[in-house]
Image (cartoon, rainbow, N blue to C red; front, side, top):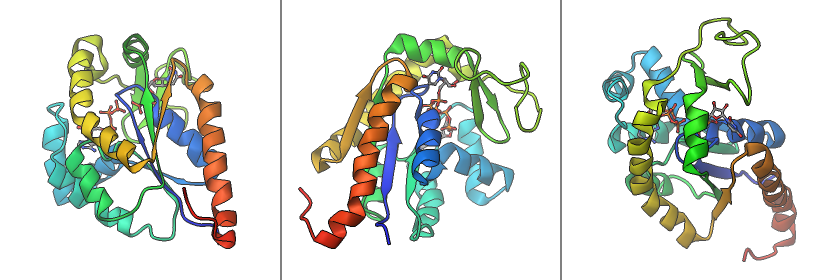
Length: 227
Ligand SMILES: Nc1ncnc2c1ncn2[C@@H]1O[C@H](COP(=O)(O)OP(=O)(O)OP(=O)(O)O)[C@@H](O)[C@H]1O
Ligand SMILES: O=c1ccn([C@@H]2O[C@H](COP(=O)(O)OP(=O)(O)O)[C@@H](O)[C@H]2O)c(=O)[nH]1
């Protein structure tokens, strides 16, 4: 049986984590796990963690680490038979350390995208709140303007995707992500991709994952030591 593969994708808001995660999930058959989707599911189901998380998200704040870990780690522990890619978690060093105690990651993808690009993308990002499906008027517009392709329900924009809120969000991301990135760098599993277009970054991510995922079973049978 092919060895299980666990990866994380990191990047500032608008860097394309969701877009790239979907492509990875489709091309490599990994499960795409999203912290935002987990939170939305818990909010919809009125779980204790969901009710608590909602009070932070509504104020545009990050959900505290202990709520995030209590919510996500049990879900990951259930996924012992699946390969997965996690998008949106860990965000902080405390979350990364908690994740570390649960599983060994094979790979971390970090997206490094210029500010102007993030600003342009986010000011044009439209979201279907119930599913978390994301559109952009230039890049992947909905079939009917302002409506979700699958449900036909209205799309919304988030206030904190507008340029006024973005500078503070990016500063916050840089502050909290730096030690997480340093941690994964020191473990030798960090791969950083820079650029302004997902379509141009994607071939590099695709070929990296092709080598990592396809070579693993073969490496196991031949007992080639990992570098
Ligand atoms: N790992 C996390 N730690 C703390 N809070 C989180 C985490 N992941 C998500 N959240 C909370 O859930 C909200 C929704 O997350 P989600 O990833 O869907 O959207 P987002 O804030 O628009 O992020 P992005 O713009 O990077 O896609 C976040 O704004 C934040 O309040
Ligand atoms: O090359 C790209 C990649 C993404 N997007 C759009 O940019 C926004 C942010 O992408 P995503 O939600 O995937 O980023 P995340 O916040 O998850 O990192 C969305 O409206 C995407 O449709 C874009 O215009 N060009």
